[in-house]
Amino acid sequence: MKNIFRKLILSVVVLAFALQSCSDFGDTNIDPLAANEINPDFQFSFLQLRVSGERYENWRTVLIYSSTMIQHLAALPEYWSGDKYLYNAQYSGALMERCYQQQVLQSVDLINTLEKKQAAGEAVANKLAAARIWNVALFHRITDLYGDVPYSEAGKGFLEGIDEPKYDPQSEIYFDMLKELEEACAQFDAGQPTYGSADFIYGGDVDQWKRYGYSLMLRLGMRLTKVDATAAEAWVKKAIAGGVMTNQDDSAKVPHTDGPEGINRNGIGEVWLADNNQHLSATFVNWMQSHGDPRLDVLGVVPNGTEQKGLPNGYNATTIKDYLGLNPTDDVDMGQFSDVNPVLVRTNSPMIFMYYSEVEFLLAEAAVRGWHTGDAEAHYNAGVRAAIKQYGDFFDASASVSDADVDAYLAANPFDGSLRMIGEQHWAANFMNEYEAYANWRRTGYPELAPVNYPGNVTNGQIPRRLAYFEGEAASNPEKLNEALQRQGMPTDFTQMLKVPMWWDKQ
Image (cartoon, rainbow, N blue to C red; front, side, top):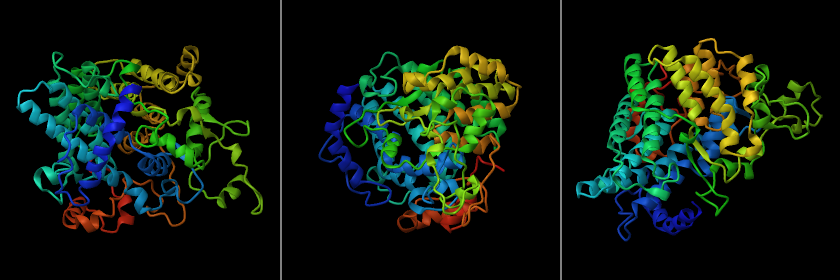
């Protein structure tokens, strides 16, 4: 693994040139690859790290917005905009900006290259299938945060001369992603070469890639429950029949190293080197305390050594004093609030894209809905067990929880057959996988979070239902952006976009 990381650095110069020269937000008719032919193996490695992301988008989109809106984390400074439902153009549009300037271009180019090789008779079926699945992992993050986005024409400035890509309706994006997953999973061929060690996620294991593909299908199928239950049921059943993740080792995660600086490092871990204002949310800590959850002392540490205590969302450095019953001139001891355990947020921590625990919760939900013949309680229990143990398994042995403690927790909190219990555990299990925690909360409504009403918030005191588009699109692609806004019934005022539910988030 370390060797392939070192080799990858040699390709960064070429790829960086490509990223700077061709994007949907600039001059897209320059051939970024004219002087160099990029090895698809290195490009796939590079793309996995790019989609994992750098500090820039992880700080803004994962942490400042998603983690605080979903009340896993809380912070006092106003620049932590999601904590207070404030609008910050750069932060809200960060993922969209980075994805289209960097990730989408590489993904589209890689798939195009592999399709040409396949048409020429080269044995690249496995590489193409994995690239298609990873492309879905990339795009479903984008559309789940922004709604209608460039999809079918995205990243094709050089390939097809499309400088101003259209925004596809989210409904069309979703059904095409599901189609891509179905075709990609069927495309794998055990007799053909794989990426091998250039694949940081599964090391070229075809069976694991298929299980990840069908697990993504399960996730996306479930996302349709509020808007198209018939389609949701059909895709969920298809995913289960195909074969989803079966154990902890199937979890989809991108490994990282401590250096060199840049894409080899975990972007969330890099944030912790620059910002220490974030704490566990009181909502999250209180939920774990009320259930006697053994994760609490794994996920949180209290600097001053007192009992775990979460920071409430929606406060600043002044109003927190009122909350704590202090005088205006008193200092606030921030050491009383639970920090995230540092072993979970290192620069060499893996970036999680899908835990096995999530799959078990989705299977439990499918069983409750009558879409799966499996035992809902068995899936629920398996999900809880995997979720509690995943930190010791993937991050650090010091974060391990014993089987006896898990058994005691399940005995004290028996499954009652409700979607509420599944939704709450799903929320807890996706701590630090905040894109998915935020998306699944909007779909299910669980846990039932109490919104904040910070002065000057842009949502009338309601948790945002999406992020606002990258504002640069208003200048570079105004016609297609305005078409998308009109189609979705959205205002042209970027500050008001956060209030509008997207297609699958039917109210």
